[in-house]
Length: 182
Image (cartoon, rainbow, N blue to C red; front, side, top):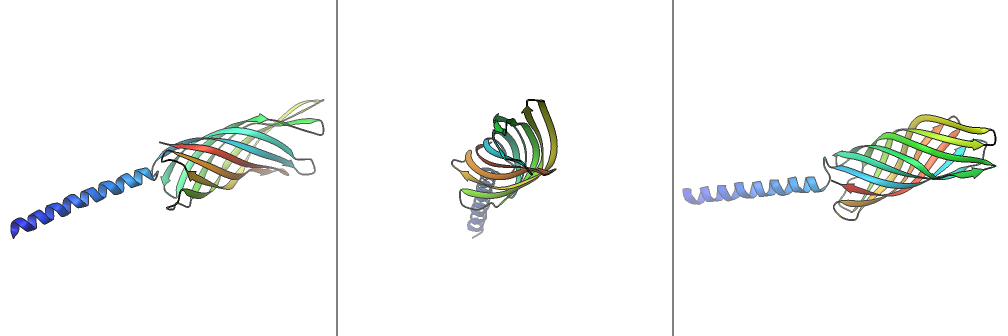
């Protein structure tokens, strides 16, 4: 009887360790504490109040970490790849960078919706017949998006972001990209 009880306790202990190891593996796979990096292409709308809207394109990179399945922290930097000419003025978004927090709606499906908030510094350039004018400013940024897992290490994303809203000028972006988890 004692031998049987010891054997049952041993099997229960081994099963408990196996279950714990499986749970730890699942946590790792879900990205808990996992680092990630990504690339995005964004279509940006620069809308100064009282003037025509300029449509430009940017490429950006991001690096981040998921502190929990619901909270991430990331940094982004990007540059303009396509300018726009509005009323004889060439408008470009030279570069931007910022730091953000993501609030993720972690779930069982491959799609994870998220909200993002942080600060962005943008550098705009306008080239006219009178010369080139540069302006760089920082502002609160926020947006919504969704990550769609394609494989355990690769996901795609779609995102809307208000990068800038200051001094009667707004900069909105609609982006698509790929994210690689480590």
